Image (tube, rainbow, N blue to C red; front, side):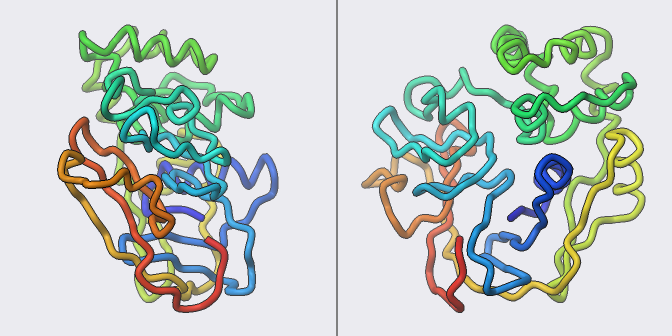
Length: 253
């Protein structure tokens, strides 16, 4: 189950190669869509899902040290209890894809350009060029055993890596998920593997109510709200979350 960007779709394509997983779900701000409405076992990719939902993710999902931690989330920020109130600036600010590369010891792209492109996805490179965050950025690359990327960051400028980035948003129209051919070809050339797109038409099964608030206005920690499907601390002061408004058809989420 993915979202509308390359970080998610690239991660899904990696997991397809490692485990043979096939994409059945897609999540937008409006809700959850699936191809096979009978299928129940979904795993999120680049989705900040909570309440025991299985997911690969890299968002900060805790408001404070007492927030709920999803035990089925492969998320180093959640594992290390990175939260908005106490240690937000210590977060791992990488793509979900980089975390998947690390988790399964997947070889990085062979060329410098390939590594630069991988770093450009979801702006995973930017922290290296911020003096206040460079040490933390490098420490996370060391923890994830991705130290060869430090050499790339030292060798090339922020602009050179940023210029490797192409359009990362996928298109969802008429219940079909597509990706611009030029961008897809570029990604596949530099990553060295196919960006797999789902074959089939999606049907909406859950409707969301989207929320985006300053965390200081929240009366309760929404990570404990069973109707919240996903939440992410998008800045040091704001939280974005999706609340389940309506179940259209019974399907796993």
